[in-house]
Image 1 (cartoon, rainbow, N blue to C red):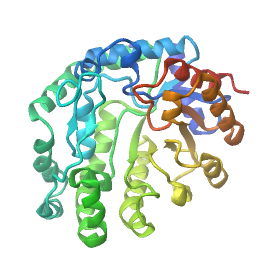
Image 2: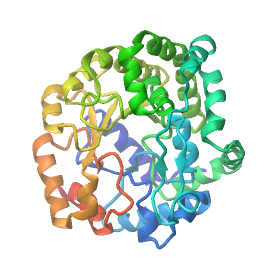
Image 3: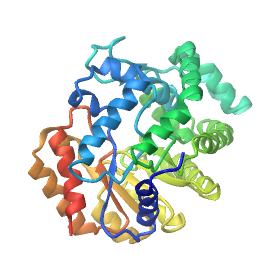
Image 4: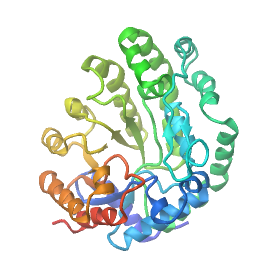
Length: 376
C-alpha cells in the first residue's frame, strides 16, 4: 500500500527528532494496557484476542488524536499476545487475566527460579538456542506459541497496513533483551543477583555464549517487521540496582554492543531504561551522537542527563505513570511544561514514563499530548 502523506511526514518527524531538528516536542503513544478500560473491553479479552487488541488500541489512539496529534507510536499498536512477547524477552511465565488471574486484572510476571545451576553449563557449551529450547517449554504453552506465530505470519502484513492506514508510524517494532535480563528473568532476580557476586565468571561466560544468538535474533526480528527501530531493554541492570563492577562487566558491554549492532544494520536503538540510571548516564556518550533514543521512566533525572549529554541522545519520556493514573489534567500539563522548560523540545518525544498504566485516566493522557503539542 502507498502510505498517506501525513504518515510519511510523521516518519520524517521521528528522524528529525532523533537528529535534534524537530520544530516542537514530538508526541509518542505508549500504553499497552491503557485502552481496555476506557473502551469498555474486558482485559481478559483484550490480551487474548489479537484482532480485538489491535482494533481497540487504534480506536483509543484515534480518540486521543482528535484532541492532540499523536505523531508516532513507541512500539506498535498491539495485535500481539502479551504473555508470548514477555516470555520471549525474559524467559519467565506470565500469569494472565481470565486464566490464573481475575478477568479485569493486569497480567503478572511470575518470579520463579526456572534456570537451574546446571543450565549455566548448557548455555556455555551450546549457546542461546539450546538454552531457550530448554527453558521456554517450562514457562510457556508451546501450542500457544505456535498459534501466535501462525497468526503473525497470516496477519502481520494486514495488521501493519491497518496501522499505516491510521497514519501512525512506530519508532520501534521489536523488543530485545541483553543477556543480563534474559538470565535474570529465567533465574529469578534474587538468585541471579546472588550469582553475580558468587559466580561472576560463570555468569559472564554464559552471557558471552548466548550473546551471538541474542544479536542475530534482534536484527532478524526487526528486519522481518520492516521496523525502523528496536528497543534494547534495561530493567534489572539499572545503575540503581547493581554495583558499578557488575554494571561495567555484565550490563553495559552487552547493551553497548546491541546498540552498535543495530546502528550498523541501519536500525535505530531505543534504550528502554526503567529504574534510575543517573550514575552511568554519561556512558551513553560512547555511542554515536544523534543516532539513538533514551526511553526513561521518570526515575532517571532527565534534567541532569541533558546537561551531561547535551544533544548527544534524544529523550523519550517521561511523564510518571502514577501521575497519569491519579493526577489531574492540570497536574499533567504542569509536569510536561516544567520538563520542556528545563530540557527543551529539541530531540524530545513526550510520552508516559516506561508505559502508561492500565488505569491511566483518558483526560490525563489527552492533557499530556495536548501540553506537548501546544508548548512554545
